[in-house]
Length: 348
Image 1: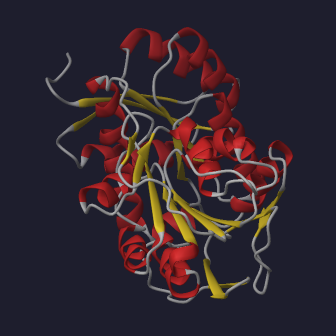
Image 2 (image 1 turned 135 degrees about the horizontal axis):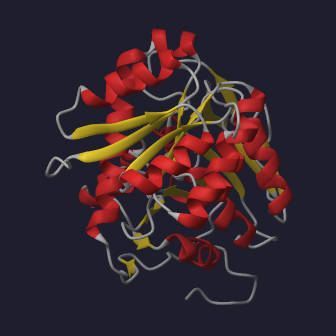
Protein backbone atom coordinates (compact mmCIF):
# COMPACT_ATOMS: atom_id res chain seq x y z
CA UNK A 1 0.00 0.00 0.00
CA UNK A 2 1.29 3.45 -0.95
CA UNK A 3 2.07 5.65 2.05
CA UNK A 4 0.75 9.13 1.38
CA UNK A 5 3.33 11.76 0.52
CA UNK A 6 6.34 9.44 0.56
CA UNK A 7 8.82 9.15 -2.29
CA UNK A 8 8.73 5.51 -3.42
CA UNK A 9 12.09 4.02 -4.46
CA UNK A 10 13.08 0.72 -6.07
CA UNK A 11 16.68 -0.32 -5.24
CA UNK A 12 18.43 -2.46 -7.88
CA UNK A 13 21.82 -4.09 -7.22
CA UNK A 14 23.27 -7.60 -7.49
CA UNK A 15 25.08 -7.12 -4.15
CA UNK A 16 22.95 -7.93 -1.09
CA UNK A 17 25.23 -5.66 0.93
CA UNK A 18 24.64 -2.70 -1.39
CA UNK A 19 20.88 -3.31 -1.53
CA UNK A 20 20.79 -3.24 2.26
CA UNK A 21 23.14 -0.25 2.58
CA UNK A 22 21.23 1.90 0.08
CA UNK A 23 17.84 0.86 1.49
CA UNK A 24 18.95 1.68 5.04
CA UNK A 25 20.19 5.13 3.98
CA UNK A 26 16.98 5.88 2.11
CA UNK A 27 14.62 4.67 4.84
CA UNK A 28 16.41 6.74 7.48
CA UNK A 29 14.35 9.59 6.02
CA UNK A 30 10.64 9.39 6.95
CA UNK A 31 9.74 10.97 3.61
CA UNK A 32 11.19 8.07 1.60
CA UNK A 33 9.90 4.52 1.26
CA UNK A 34 11.83 1.64 -0.35
CA UNK A 35 9.03 -0.29 -2.05
CA UNK A 36 11.21 -3.25 -3.06
CA UNK A 37 14.64 -4.35 -4.26
CA UNK A 38 15.81 -6.22 -7.37
CA UNK A 39 18.96 -8.24 -8.08
CA UNK A 40 19.36 -7.66 -11.81
CA UNK A 41 18.04 -5.77 -14.80
CA UNK A 42 15.28 -8.25 -15.66
CA UNK A 43 13.85 -8.08 -12.13
CA UNK A 44 14.15 -4.30 -12.25
CA UNK A 45 12.06 -4.01 -15.43
CA UNK A 46 9.38 -6.32 -14.01
CA UNK A 47 9.17 -4.49 -10.70
CA UNK A 48 9.11 -1.03 -12.32
CA UNK A 49 6.02 -2.14 -14.26
CA UNK A 50 4.38 -3.77 -11.24
CA UNK A 51 5.16 -1.19 -8.57
CA UNK A 52 5.37 2.11 -10.49
CA UNK A 53 8.02 3.63 -8.18
CA UNK A 54 8.84 7.34 -8.20
CA UNK A 55 12.58 6.67 -8.66
CA UNK A 56 15.01 3.78 -9.22
CA UNK A 57 18.60 3.39 -8.02
CA UNK A 58 20.27 1.17 -10.62
CA UNK A 59 23.57 -0.70 -10.50
CA UNK A 60 25.57 -1.02 -13.73
CA UNK A 61 27.27 -4.43 -13.51
CA UNK A 62 24.70 -7.20 -12.87
CA UNK A 63 24.07 -10.77 -14.07
CA UNK A 64 21.38 -11.73 -16.62
CA UNK A 65 20.83 -8.10 -17.65
CA UNK A 66 23.18 -5.19 -16.89
CA UNK A 67 22.10 -1.74 -15.77
CA UNK A 68 22.59 0.03 -19.09
CA UNK A 69 20.39 -2.46 -20.94
CA UNK A 70 17.75 -2.24 -18.21
CA UNK A 71 17.92 1.56 -18.33
CA UNK A 72 17.20 1.54 -22.08
CA UNK A 73 14.10 -0.60 -21.51
CA UNK A 74 12.89 1.54 -18.60
CA UNK A 75 13.29 4.79 -20.55
CA UNK A 76 11.46 3.32 -23.56
CA UNK A 77 8.65 1.53 -21.73
CA UNK A 78 8.17 3.25 -18.37
CA UNK A 79 10.28 6.44 -18.14
CA UNK A 80 10.99 7.68 -14.63
CA UNK A 81 13.93 9.19 -12.72
CA UNK A 82 16.91 6.83 -12.40
CA UNK A 83 20.03 7.28 -10.25
CA UNK A 84 22.93 5.07 -11.33
CA UNK A 85 25.05 3.33 -8.67
CA UNK A 86 28.57 3.74 -10.05
CA UNK A 87 32.01 2.41 -9.16
CA UNK A 88 34.62 5.16 -8.96
CA UNK A 89 36.81 3.76 -11.72
CA UNK A 90 37.51 4.91 -15.27
CA UNK A 91 35.34 2.06 -16.55
CA UNK A 92 32.61 3.05 -14.09
CA UNK A 93 32.85 6.64 -15.25
CA UNK A 94 32.43 5.69 -18.91
CA UNK A 95 29.39 3.55 -18.10
CA UNK A 96 27.91 6.33 -15.99
CA UNK A 97 28.32 8.94 -18.71
CA UNK A 98 26.65 6.55 -21.15
CA UNK A 99 23.81 6.07 -18.65
CA UNK A 100 23.33 9.84 -18.39
CA UNK A 101 23.08 10.02 -22.18
CA UNK A 102 20.45 7.26 -22.06
CA UNK A 103 18.31 9.25 -19.63
CA UNK A 104 19.58 8.64 -16.08
CA UNK A 105 19.33 11.79 -13.97
CA UNK A 106 22.51 11.41 -11.91
CA UNK A 107 24.66 8.87 -10.05
CA UNK A 108 25.76 7.90 -6.57
CA UNK A 109 29.12 6.24 -5.73
CA UNK A 110 29.38 2.51 -5.11
CA UNK A 111 33.07 2.33 -4.16
CA UNK A 112 32.89 0.90 -0.63
CA UNK A 113 36.05 2.57 0.66
CA UNK A 114 34.70 5.91 -0.57
CA UNK A 115 31.33 5.27 1.08
CA UNK A 116 32.92 4.22 4.37
CA UNK A 117 35.04 7.37 4.52
CA UNK A 118 32.26 9.77 3.55
CA UNK A 119 29.14 7.93 4.65
CA UNK A 120 27.40 10.98 6.13
CA UNK A 121 28.10 13.12 3.07
CA UNK A 122 26.99 10.33 0.70
CA UNK A 123 23.81 9.72 2.69
CA UNK A 124 22.82 13.38 2.89
CA UNK A 125 23.47 13.86 -0.82
CA UNK A 126 21.48 10.73 -1.74
CA UNK A 127 18.46 11.76 0.33
CA UNK A 128 18.41 15.29 -1.03
CA UNK A 129 18.81 14.14 -4.62
CA UNK A 130 16.00 11.58 -4.38
CA UNK A 131 13.49 13.99 -2.84
CA UNK A 132 14.39 17.00 -4.97
CA UNK A 133 14.42 15.14 -8.29
CA UNK A 134 11.08 13.43 -7.69
CA UNK A 135 9.31 16.48 -6.34
CA UNK A 136 10.39 18.67 -9.22
CA UNK A 137 8.72 16.19 -11.54
CA UNK A 138 5.55 16.26 -9.46
CA UNK A 139 5.44 20.08 -9.57
CA UNK A 140 5.37 20.11 -13.39
CA UNK A 141 7.07 23.46 -13.72
CA UNK A 142 5.87 25.36 -16.77
CA UNK A 143 7.89 27.39 -19.27
CA UNK A 144 9.51 30.56 -17.94
CA UNK A 145 10.44 33.80 -19.63
CA UNK A 146 14.15 34.64 -19.79
CA UNK A 147 15.06 37.52 -17.50
CA UNK A 148 17.90 39.79 -18.53
CA UNK A 149 18.12 42.03 -15.49
CA UNK A 150 21.29 43.80 -16.59
CA UNK A 151 21.93 44.31 -20.32
CA UNK A 152 25.35 43.10 -21.51
CA UNK A 153 27.75 45.90 -20.59
CA UNK A 154 29.91 47.59 -23.20
CA UNK A 155 33.30 46.30 -22.17
CA UNK A 156 35.64 43.55 -23.24
CA UNK A 157 35.31 40.25 -21.39
CA UNK A 158 38.20 37.79 -21.33
CA UNK A 159 37.04 34.71 -19.41
CA UNK A 160 33.92 32.59 -18.93
CA UNK A 161 33.77 30.50 -15.72
CA UNK A 162 31.04 27.86 -15.35
CA UNK A 163 29.95 26.08 -12.16
CA UNK A 164 27.60 23.09 -12.31
CA UNK A 165 26.69 19.92 -10.41
CA UNK A 166 23.73 17.50 -10.61
CA UNK A 167 22.55 17.36 -14.21
CA UNK A 168 25.74 19.00 -15.40
CA UNK A 169 27.26 16.42 -17.78
CA UNK A 170 24.27 16.43 -20.13
CA UNK A 171 23.75 20.18 -19.73
CA UNK A 172 27.35 20.84 -20.75
CA UNK A 173 26.94 18.54 -23.75
CA UNK A 174 23.96 20.63 -24.83
CA UNK A 175 25.49 24.10 -24.50
CA UNK A 176 29.21 23.84 -25.28
CA UNK A 177 28.67 22.80 -28.93
CA UNK A 178 26.56 25.96 -29.32
CA UNK A 179 29.24 28.34 -28.03
CA UNK A 180 30.68 30.57 -30.80
CA UNK A 181 33.64 28.65 -32.28
CA UNK A 182 35.57 31.93 -32.43
CA UNK A 183 34.76 32.95 -28.83
CA UNK A 184 37.61 35.36 -27.94
CA UNK A 185 37.89 34.08 -24.36
CA UNK A 186 39.02 31.07 -22.41
CA UNK A 187 36.45 28.90 -20.61
CA UNK A 188 36.94 27.26 -17.20
CA UNK A 189 34.48 24.70 -15.80
CA UNK A 190 33.94 23.19 -12.38
CA UNK A 191 31.63 20.16 -12.53
CA UNK A 192 31.14 18.32 -9.23
CA UNK A 193 32.44 14.84 -9.99
CA UNK A 194 34.75 12.28 -8.35
CA UNK A 195 38.27 11.49 -9.61
CA UNK A 196 38.33 9.36 -12.79
CA UNK A 197 35.08 10.90 -14.03
CA UNK A 198 36.21 14.28 -15.31
CA UNK A 199 38.74 13.11 -17.91
CA UNK A 200 36.19 10.91 -19.78
CA UNK A 201 33.69 13.78 -19.58
CA UNK A 202 36.25 16.22 -21.02
CA UNK A 203 36.99 13.78 -23.85
CA UNK A 204 33.28 13.52 -24.72
CA UNK A 205 32.86 17.28 -24.65
CA UNK A 206 35.95 17.68 -26.83
CA UNK A 207 34.41 15.47 -29.53
CA UNK A 208 31.16 17.45 -29.47
CA UNK A 209 32.58 20.98 -29.31
CA UNK A 210 34.17 23.21 -31.97
CA UNK A 211 37.16 23.90 -29.72
CA UNK A 212 39.61 22.04 -27.47
CA UNK A 213 38.16 20.65 -24.23
CA UNK A 214 40.39 18.85 -21.75
CA UNK A 215 40.94 18.19 -18.08
CA UNK A 216 42.95 21.04 -16.56
CA UNK A 217 46.53 20.65 -15.38
CA UNK A 218 48.50 22.96 -13.13
CA UNK A 219 50.07 25.78 -15.15
CA UNK A 220 47.75 25.48 -18.16
CA UNK A 221 47.26 28.68 -20.13
CA UNK A 222 43.84 30.32 -20.45
CA UNK A 223 43.49 31.05 -24.15
CA UNK A 224 40.61 31.51 -26.61
CA UNK A 225 39.48 28.24 -28.14
CA UNK A 226 40.32 26.17 -25.06
CA UNK A 227 37.99 24.83 -22.35
CA UNK A 228 39.59 23.54 -19.14
CA UNK A 229 37.59 21.23 -16.88
CA UNK A 230 38.54 20.92 -13.21
CA UNK A 231 39.81 17.41 -12.33
CA UNK A 232 37.68 15.50 -9.84
CA UNK A 233 39.15 15.73 -6.36
CA UNK A 234 41.13 18.93 -7.07
CA UNK A 235 40.37 22.63 -7.25
CA UNK A 236 40.74 24.73 -10.38
CA UNK A 237 41.65 28.41 -9.89
CA UNK A 238 43.18 31.28 -11.80
CA UNK A 239 46.74 31.74 -10.55
CA UNK A 240 47.28 34.91 -12.58
CA UNK A 241 45.61 36.31 -15.65
CA UNK A 242 46.12 33.78 -18.43
CA UNK A 243 47.20 30.86 -16.21
CA UNK A 244 45.46 28.37 -13.92
CA UNK A 245 46.50 26.36 -10.90
CA UNK A 246 45.22 22.90 -9.97
CA UNK A 247 45.70 21.58 -6.43
CA UNK A 248 43.93 19.98 -3.46
CA UNK A 249 44.00 22.99 -1.11
CA UNK A 250 41.78 23.72 0.78
CA UNK A 251 41.56 20.02 1.59
CA UNK A 252 38.50 20.42 3.82
CA UNK A 253 36.35 22.16 1.22
CA UNK A 254 32.82 20.72 1.09
CA UNK A 255 33.19 20.25 -2.67
CA UNK A 256 36.38 19.34 -4.49
CA UNK A 257 36.46 20.85 -7.08
CA UNK A 258 34.76 23.93 -5.65
CA UNK A 259 32.84 26.49 -7.71
CA UNK A 260 33.45 29.08 -4.99
CA UNK A 261 37.22 28.62 -5.31
CA UNK A 262 37.06 29.11 -9.08
CA UNK A 263 34.76 32.15 -9.02
CA UNK A 264 36.72 33.87 -6.24
CA UNK A 265 39.94 33.52 -8.24
CA UNK A 266 38.24 34.89 -11.36
CA UNK A 267 37.09 37.88 -9.30
CA UNK A 268 40.66 38.50 -8.09
CA UNK A 269 42.41 38.25 -11.44
CA UNK A 270 39.78 39.20 -14.05
CA UNK A 271 37.29 41.34 -12.11
CA UNK A 272 35.01 43.22 -14.52
CA UNK A 273 36.36 41.17 -17.44
CA UNK A 274 35.05 37.89 -16.00
CA UNK A 275 31.73 36.17 -16.75
CA UNK A 276 30.35 33.70 -14.20
CA UNK A 277 27.72 31.10 -15.11
CA UNK A 278 25.95 29.04 -12.43
CA UNK A 279 23.98 26.03 -13.66
CA UNK A 280 21.96 23.10 -12.32
CA UNK A 281 23.02 21.54 -9.02
CA UNK A 282 22.23 21.06 -5.34
CA UNK A 283 23.30 23.37 -2.55
CA UNK A 284 24.88 26.80 -2.91
CA UNK A 285 28.45 26.22 -4.08
CA UNK A 286 29.38 29.23 -6.20
CA UNK A 287 27.25 31.78 -4.38
CA UNK A 288 30.04 33.36 -2.35
CA UNK A 289 32.50 33.28 -5.24
CA UNK A 290 29.93 34.94 -7.50
CA UNK A 291 29.33 37.55 -4.82
CA UNK A 292 33.02 38.49 -5.00
CA UNK A 293 32.88 38.52 -8.80
CA UNK A 294 29.91 40.90 -8.72
CA UNK A 295 31.70 43.18 -6.26
CA UNK A 296 34.56 43.41 -8.77
CA UNK A 297 32.17 44.28 -11.60
CA UNK A 298 31.89 40.87 -13.28
CA UNK A 299 28.79 39.65 -15.12
CA UNK A 300 26.73 36.70 -13.79
CA UNK A 301 24.33 34.34 -15.57
CA UNK A 302 22.12 31.85 -13.68
CA UNK A 303 20.23 28.95 -15.24
CA UNK A 304 16.47 29.21 -14.71
CA UNK A 305 14.43 26.80 -12.59
CA UNK A 306 12.53 25.26 -15.48
CA UNK A 307 15.57 23.87 -17.27
CA UNK A 308 17.50 22.77 -14.14
CA UNK A 309 17.56 19.15 -13.02
CA UNK A 310 17.97 20.57 -9.51
CA UNK A 311 17.42 24.28 -8.89
CA UNK A 312 19.79 24.73 -5.97
CA UNK A 313 23.02 26.46 -6.98
CA UNK A 314 21.36 28.92 -9.41
CA UNK A 315 18.57 29.58 -6.90
CA UNK A 316 21.11 30.56 -4.24
CA UNK A 317 22.59 33.13 -6.66
CA UNK A 318 19.20 34.45 -7.83
CA UNK A 319 17.80 34.82 -4.31
CA UNK A 320 20.81 36.92 -3.30
CA UNK A 321 20.22 39.27 -6.24
CA UNK A 322 23.56 38.36 -7.81
CA UNK A 323 22.34 37.32 -11.28
CA UNK A 324 22.46 39.72 -14.21
CA UNK A 325 20.52 37.26 -16.38
CA UNK A 326 18.33 34.24 -15.54
CA UNK A 327 18.08 32.05 -18.61
CA UNK A 328 16.86 28.64 -19.83
CA UNK A 329 19.77 26.31 -20.54
CA UNK A 330 19.39 26.52 -24.32
CA UNK A 331 19.60 30.33 -24.29
CA UNK A 332 22.86 30.59 -22.34
CA UNK A 333 25.20 30.16 -25.38
CA UNK A 334 23.44 32.89 -27.38
CA UNK A 335 23.55 35.29 -24.43
CA UNK A 336 27.26 34.62 -23.93
CA UNK A 337 27.85 35.35 -27.62
CA UNK A 338 26.25 38.78 -27.06
CA UNK A 339 28.91 39.52 -24.45
CA UNK A 340 31.57 39.03 -27.14
CA UNK A 341 30.33 40.95 -30.22
CA UNK A 342 32.35 40.73 -33.37
CA UNK A 343 34.39 43.73 -34.40
CA UNK A 344 32.25 46.48 -35.88
CA UNK A 345 28.96 45.26 -34.36
CA UNK A 346 26.94 46.65 -31.48
CA UNK A 347 25.81 44.74 -28.41
CA UNK A 348 22.18 43.66 -28.29
